[in-house]
Image (cartoon, rainbow, N blue to C red; front, side):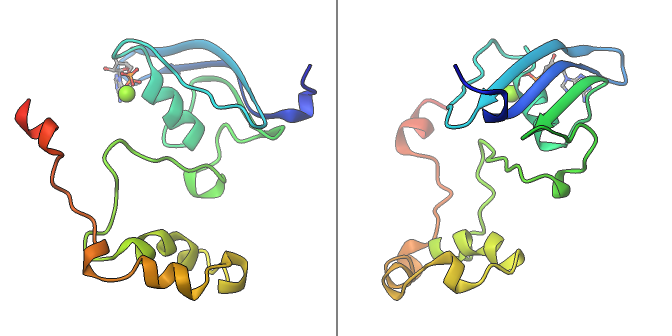
Length: 145
Ligand SMILES: Nc1ncnc2c1ncn2[C@@H]1O[C@H](COP(=O)(O)OP(=O)(O)O)[C@@H](O)[C@H]1O
Ligand SMILES: [Mg+2]
């Protein structure tokens, strides 16, 4: 059995009641352990995104507590918690190639190149206009629009 210190994210009695009184998440409890891959599955409107937004800090729970490695982060603003969100629609810079898109966050955080461990080969393989992102929808998705 996993030890309690193996719990990375813990949601304890988390409720989100929006200003209009609508309760999107009610008394939700979830422990995510180190190395676990967790998927929230449920019908549209059941509160998946609201839960993720609370973990990221974009929404603050009305009740309950969110712990990250045992530390209470319930009311911590998004930039103060080491949690990242990858949105369904990627927020990429179309003018940058793959390398610079990946490097952007690390540059903002001033992570040194040595720590990044990126070598010249990686740079060469992800540079140039052919490595720019295309925002065109895949052919299959366009057909069924
Ligand atoms: N800011 C808000 N104010 C009021 N209701 C909201 C707000 N954001 C989301 N909701 C409602 O909360 C419910 C859960 O939404 P959401 O978490 O986006 O669901 P899911 O991601 O599971 O589809 C939905 O009924 C949605 O309309
Ligand atoms: Mg959603």
